[in-house]
Image (cartoon, rainbow, N blue to C red):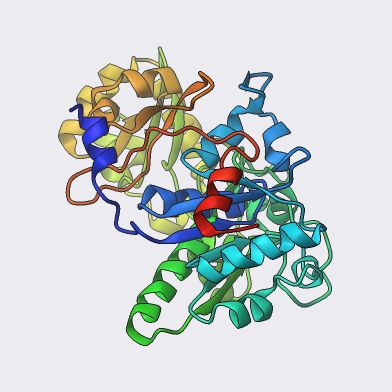
Amino acid sequence: MTEDASAAAEPGLLDGLVVLDMSQFLSGPFAALRLQDLGARVIKIERPDGGDLCRRLYLSDTEIGGDSTLFHAINRGKQSFAADFKDPADLAAIRALVARADVVIQNFRPGVIARLGLDHAAAAAINPRLVYASITGWGDDGPWRGRPGQDLLAQARSGVMWLNGDDDQGPVPFGLAIADLLAGNAIVQGVLAALVRRGLTGRGAHVETSLIEALVDFQFEVLTTHLNDGGRIPKRSGFRNAHAYLSAPYGVYRTADGWLALAMTPLDRLADLLGMPGLAGLAADAAFKRRDEIKRAVADRFAEATTADWLAILEPADVWCAEVLDWPALFASEGFRGLDMLQTVARGDGVAIRTTAAPLRVDGRRPKGAAAAPRIGEHTAAIRAEFGLS
């Protein structure tokens, strides 16, 4: 048996638990994916006419088996149950699944799930042991409640865009859906804690978060500084900014053949290693005020030699630095290969996709599965038969 097959055959930590994923796009499906990685059975409830809208949300022009690569990445290993929420018979089937589920995850806009009769109060009446997880854009109350909850919009309102890029660039968004993924992670933490309590007391719970809450929490370090520092606005450096609150040389620099990241490093030590005596003896406040000037001088010095040359000088001196890798270089690196974080998943119609694996290891093993993301309604008949649904 291969290592992948052995890992897949090993029961997961959540083996035996049933999760109903009634969410779309990223935040909820990502939370369900992580629970699936830990061994839960995830049944994805999808509309028969097109399914999760993420099936058609393309990151590129690459399509596999009729669905986007994004859908495949975030829905691998799940089962698909096709149901029309507006059809009374299908809604009755969903309620019957709620009665047998351990966890429900939903990210409908506030008010929608209540109109469907599947909000927490209704679900808890059906199944008091249920752990019910809700993700919204802006919370369930307040003036933003009904506005579209989308990652870029959450980044825009959270203040996080003013931490990226250089000082003259204006607001710079992250190039990843950080609000969705952070909210999904937060919900997973809440769900796991609720499951622990349920095991002790038998009580279910309603766990809630939103994109804006996840992004505020993401910034807890710098926000705490701001709230206790006279309300001063963080000042990004004007040259190769990497952190609005940190002094030079913190940043990313071009070398003769690539790029080098340099983290917190005393300027006195760097002065000696780089042969730049002018960097020595600067007080912390002076170094911060002159950080653009210092970083430009350091950049000019790094450009004189290759990345490997600089690593040979800096790493033995315990300077915190790293080569900046692109994806092909990352995948080719010995450090990444040792992590075994890629896997191939497949399904019965011949679709196979190379994707990432769970970022967790349990008892020394990384959970892996063989199943790709499902076709719309692929498991409806089998689930109806198993759960005795009409």
